[in-house]
Length: 125
Image (cartoon, rainbow, N blue to C red; front, side):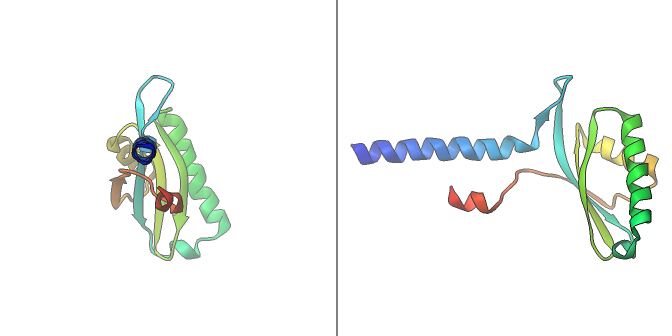
């Protein structure tokens, strides 16, 4: 009976952790709306060779547009590779990501909503 109880407790803890991981993508905002996480793929030939000044300018443009758009969209960070930039954003919807790209003059070749987040810790469940 003690083993059965331990298995049940472990199953409940695991289920709660998994639900928490799945809901990490949705973050409540000040106005009680929900922000989702998105990964944006931007094809920019030569992105990996951009100078620090060029990257600073691109970042400043992005931040200016986001400030104008208000609190329903946030830029988290980006990964710059050879010919692509992968950006992570929080936004209420995909349309805000598209509007940001258009206003900033950035390509948004692919916009994917993050379904859940996994990490090495996931293997420990």
